[in-house]
Length: 392
Ligand code: FEO
Image (tube, rainbow, N blue to C red):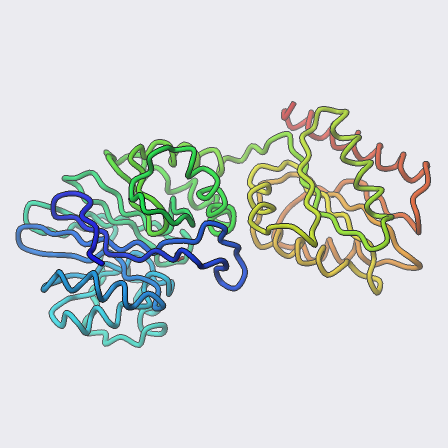
């Protein structure tokens, strides 16, 4: 199959991965994904921006057959889904030099075992003249590895943004036709990959906003013809202010914890607080992560298993701690049989976040009306906290 000509002298030479359903053996991909690589021709020089996942060797090889010369290979990001075939590209084009940030050198050597004579580092703001076309390198660390950079094609006003602004969405449409189609895949991507780096994106986003932009071309998903759509979405997602939303991550064994959860949902809804409950045995982790982007309060509801959290609840707590969402408060409800250390375990696990802990509701056995009243009290406490934070 031929590469796709996007504009005069600019081609998509990446690969679609229609059937991939899991990334990192962890992240669900309901819409597959794409590994975008772009080839840009100037009058004198040709560059390839990113390679693709090593599993897509045949696709890249096919696409590059049309291009006898590549002078530079730009590695915006060294994670394997974009760098895995860099050794192949360097072998096919022995004259090509690999351009990357100084902090990418060690990763390139250790992950790809490259000859360091082929590597050339670029400074933040440095430009590369292709003849009639100029690429400016913009260091943008931690989106989501330390070495990441963006490449801006100045004359065409196209930003090649690597994982930043990406979405796990496979399509035969290279340009986003309707913005709303990308909202969920892009938010899912942000939630799973970028959320832990929210503060760093806040600090560096002005580097993108200061550019004249006609298009944003990320390394996953479609190209944004209206860059402001995804920039505004990111500004909302990285903002410090959460929404009047409670996420309840819950699991039950014999129904007691479920009764507490049902009462909490009802009590919160009566107080005009939005609730998104996730029944962990059947939860899409991506949906849970997306809700964490906005939530002001996270409640974990777990029975006690061998004195600790249910393993599914522990998994959700681990995810929350890793993603470091902007939530302000955390709560715990659950039933236990004879003894529980689940609450202590929960607090110990949440060592990367600074949530204010709400009054826990831990019930021995099946909850009676007095126990359910404690849940109502928790809902009232959440209401007061959300009011105090100006969320309703
Ligand atoms: Fe798409 Fe961080 O690699």
